[in-house]
Image (cartoon, rainbow, N blue to C red; front, side):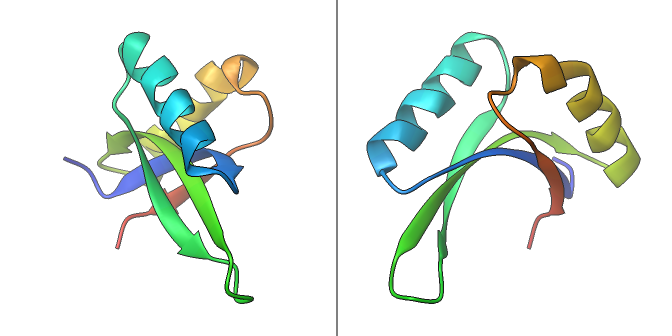
Length: 79
């Protein structure tokens, strides 16, 4: 299990995050979501795919898959 992941979506509704995770799992990817506060008492459900040893590996994979994302993405180090 690596230290980096690709964040591909942020949703306000948990149900949307769960659906997106299931879609990516069905396609054979490791997928999960985490919850981040927005600083105003609200929540974002962020969908992440993959676990990568290095940031470069995550970026390379993200660039290959970018056409499959509905919006942008970023690579984040797991805490």
